[in-house]
Length: 501
Image (cartoon, rainbow, N blue to C red; front, side, top):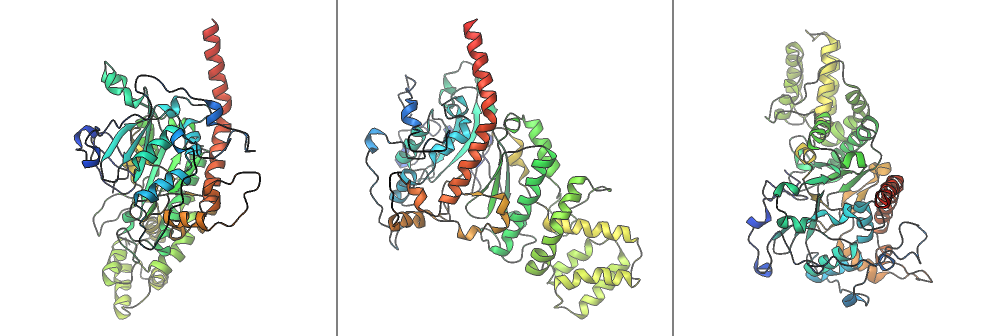
């Protein structure tokens, strides 16, 4: 199930898309006057908007240094505080007034800007970044770009996208691509290395839910995947700035934000995706894990992480071999015909035997003599089974292309109303997707807030259960910017030296 957007493909997926050129998509009735890849520019098209840095980055009320203030940047027409939205039993998270209030009062545009810009001062890292909007009428706008957080915010308040995706930084402003003499001059230069894990890829092994549904039991698959992929990215590839984001319904996305990752070409991205990809084949009864021995250190470490989850999350909670059909699949994964026959006989006599007991039967019968192959071969087969039922199932195509788009953090999932919040990997076991706040819940929390503001203005998101997620994002961005400060300073100094020469 694709969760990405490239310029060659068509809309699909819940969190990101592969889209055709937007010119090929007919606008809905609300957008008849705008082409699908060029929405009305938020600034005058003939003149680059002047940016008042003091207005955009006001340091007066914030002690976070680079993170001057998270206060919404007020345009002239929005100088007053947004009027409260009345939430009722009839309110739906996609209602225009709900989405407008969300973008006005809750979405952390300031931190999103700093995350993508890598500096508090506007630069091309953000200004040449592609955004793609999904509008309420399902029209899809490609190649949107904004020089500042303020202009992105204004566009969201004006157009009320049900969500938006983030693409690469291009060689020129995406809005200006049609003015170039050579199409080849418009090319992607930089984007985070991303990964997508979707619960539907586990449908053949999860027994509690199917399709778009999730519960606490099957969310363990996502938890396992995050733990395995995160440690590989950090220890095997040396990345430091890895952010995981809940997709809003049934999955998670990883954004690897180190500059070394952002500038990778497609070949390097494919290599990393291939390194992390393990399961092959899709037929029902086929063996999906075939790995060489001795095991690669990454797989040895993964098994150490996953074996505990296999006992609890798989054997106890999923009970994957309860049915005769599923038991037959387990037998097919064992290489020893003598052992398979002995197990089949035992299980036929106890049809309601639990999966944990069936797993224990393998060793019990092998030790009793029902084994024609070596114990080493049996151990390797059991390791492969553990990996098949626990190892991350990545949508590898999402990771392989620099020009893929992925759903932005903190947007609203259009199917659930939940916010796509970051996941703190230090507490990944505690993350509960079913307790992630919805947009209507957050607006109610603002209205019900009883605290005192005092001298320091409290932002609306600080009055809600969104606060810990925004705080985590803010700290993540601060760490990323701190690391990039020296390089930015050198680049600016070199530029000044060239000008002086």
